[in-house]
Amino acid sequence: MMINFALPLNKMNKQILPIFFAVAFIACNEDKKPTKTTTNRVDTVQIIKEDQPAEAPTGKERLIAELDKFKLAVETKNKTELAGFFNFPVADSSLMINDINAEFDRQRIENGNKITKDMFNDNFERLYEYWDFEEFKSLFEFLKPSELSGKNKLEYVYRPKNEGCYFMYHIDVKGNEVTMSYGTNTNNEYRDSHPDEAEVCGEYFSAWVFDWNGKKLTFKKQIIAG
Image (cartoon, rainbow, N blue to C red; front, side, top):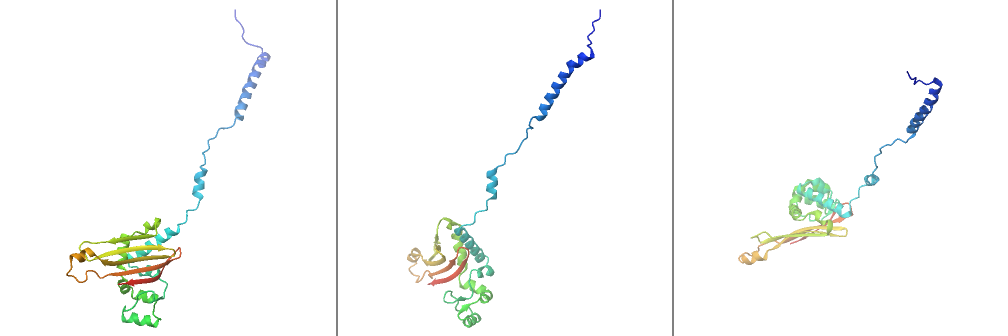
């Protein structure tokens, strides 16, 4: 005997339709669910830091930069850079400029005992030697401008063995003045061991004083002794 599992069409439709609507409802709800997106966290702290302007150099940092500039100019004998540290014309009352050579001395007198920039440039080699600018090389060998970051004074005494002189180097910062000095003094130990020598050291002292306005060093005066 055969059993007929077929249902009448109208009865089948009544059973299928509810299932169809249930599936459609679920599908619609799935579409309405918010889409999960991945966003990168913005590091606002980093952005703020990058947007901040770089800190301006302090007054001491600017001074160190100027001293480094002077150091390089002396070491390379750069007359253009060295001329920038003078406010020409410079009077002979503040700077030793006597007995350079006949032509220089004539021009100095014609200019009211002053040295002009042209005179400086034309006689640079002689003036470099005359002013003992080579001693600045020794000064900067022992004294590093960067060490002024935490202090206002640098000094060093060099005592070579078996020589009648010892050598002194200083950098002093006082208010709006910067003084660089070098000189020699008698080595007493050497003198005591050489009593037959009348003079064991030609003592001298040279100080160069500069005005410091917070941005630039400008020559003010030279002090000579010995």
